[in-house]
Length: 112
Image 1 (spheres, rainbow, N blue to C red):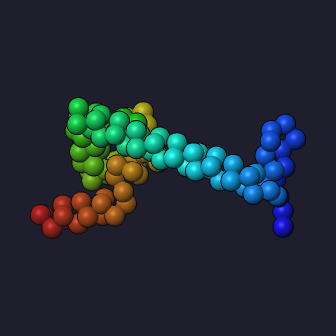
Image 2: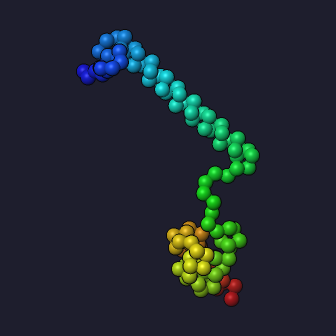
Image 3: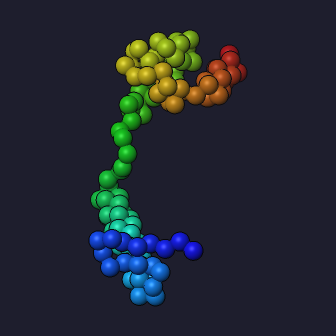
């Protein structure tokens, strides 16, 4: 089979001592990785308990999202809304998806 032999360190996996050393180092690396994951999860949980919400802030507030949906229902185009709020067209589609716009249009026509 294939073996690892380090020229600068005393690691040679063709010997039993070399394989043992390699496995010990692998176990230590795995343990360190698991400790990092545990600390990260604990830190995120502590931040959440303090009220911290992760991620990037939304480009439109909830009130702006509601207003944009009303403007869309009143005949404004998504491109006009993107220019009005200074955000991308993709963001407008995120806040005002096509299926929600048709639902709004249908409910408005039902009220008439």
